[in-house]
Image (cartoon, rainbow, N blue to C red):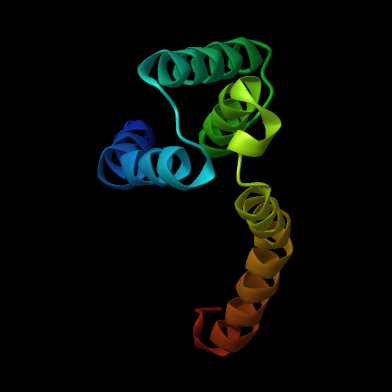
Length: 116
């Protein structure tokens, strides 16, 4: 697997699953009108490009979801379902330590089976 596999994998992941995340965010977090959706996607895209040019790693899902919350809250603060937004933030915060724990656990379990 060469270096060209990584962009292909990212593109395939976005194509098959990323649109579901954005659609779910738009439908459950807040109701966006077409202009609000355009502004959220444009703002998220500009943020992604700008921070990428600076070499700062970021999650496109987090960026777009934040843009959707921002576009929804411009209408009025009560237009955003803050309980769902809070659940999303908790899931983001728990992802790294949980992934680290399970990665360490699998390494510990699989270590005897690895070639020396």
